[in-house]
Image (cartoon, rainbow, N blue to C red; front, side, top):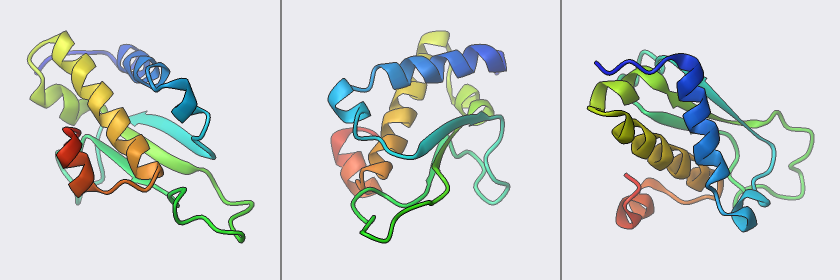
Length: 116
């Protein structure tokens, strides 16, 4: 398996977040992005996970909520990548995919858009 240290992987996630167009990034609200080595035990191989209340579902009663959470999983990502360039691309796809969930876009639509 390709070795990308945690700190470097976190930098790749930060770069992917920086690539989000400013007009979309400005709409991201109450979200924390974290890097973890492994996904939950019941979801092996998962590259990323969005946990929270999508913007399209938040209503007038949405206030004081804990931040939504986007997790990007390092080891499963490294397991499917052969080169550092593959890791950069996969991290970018994963970050966009999970941010899209924050905007209420479901997996079927993301597959149509090429962000599977």
